[in-house]
Image (cartoon, rainbow, N blue to C red; front, side):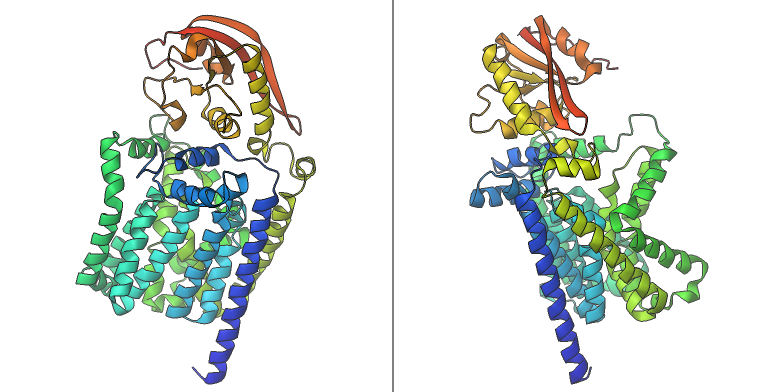
Length: 506
């Protein structure tokens, strides 16, 4: 590389870092000033963060640790719970930039970083705190260190890979696809195989196990409830073979990765299959290595979606390596590939700026633009808590009993610090807890004069049948705006006598 091209690369890198830092600041402003309430999952992770542990009911501990660190610094504010999200996503973009720059070129690194940070899903994810946020960061760091280990087999790369794997698994079990990716590279790529089977490669795996081991011990001591919940999510106990869910998941990926980026990714693999000579990048063996980290999560979750169901974000781990593949392809071929990729960046930038601007506007404006349904789960929780508090006070309630985990988590967070002075308990519809909200049993003291909020009509008869005496006192309706409401049938219940489980539901 000449001195002139080296200086140009340094300038490009400088502008890229400056751009994503400005983007992070913009997203942080969205987090700071949005009027939207916490979602139920965020409230759940906040509750976990109040007590340090190596695992929690349905997730590994990383998300709770991150929230705990932020709220210890800034307090239990909604924005503090979410504040780490844009920071982590910025770190992920930088990790992909480092991988592209080190192993290909500065332009590859910039395109890869932009491809990730401008993903449609990352714009949305930057405004909430979820398990995917730290997962994608540690996944991308792991990818950087894996490529480093493959190239030079240094101890720094080995230690970095082991730490990234361990912390990734403590973020979300979807990190298992990284292990699958490494196993595939060992099968198809002699260089990767030698690196993984070397002393340093084995040391990386040992370090990963050492970091992950406390969580495994915690699971064993707690009946493997986190593992069990993850298995429950597959939903294989219900009717199998659901092609509509499979097609929905597939088309959802255009929204997750970005419509033009996902189209370009499909084109890359399509041309690779049907016109192999059109993809000259396959001469670089590292492309095949990257593909091993893209194909498994996409293919496995697609099959899962056709069999049962899958949320759109379940294959998110495919996209860090996909960003690198598209970046390499665009810089090598140029032409229409680069135009489509840059067009995708521009489209995502426009959509993302509009979305982030919308979420800081008054809720009434958001509803007018996006409709009443888009953010209904993030609205009306303080109002719900205040109205429940008023009824509980009026009837001198001994506890509040709910039949929906989302309601429990909303009341738990917005009724914190004594705002809702009575305990909130979740009714179990089966003989064991199906969510973290159901872990604490309803006691006789709770049921002395309990305020029952029946949200799920299909479970109402079974819920009321568990009380020796019930009295209907009316309906509670919270206006969420946009013709959306949170409605409860409200009862007073006394004497908790749960019937044998499981109970049929309608």
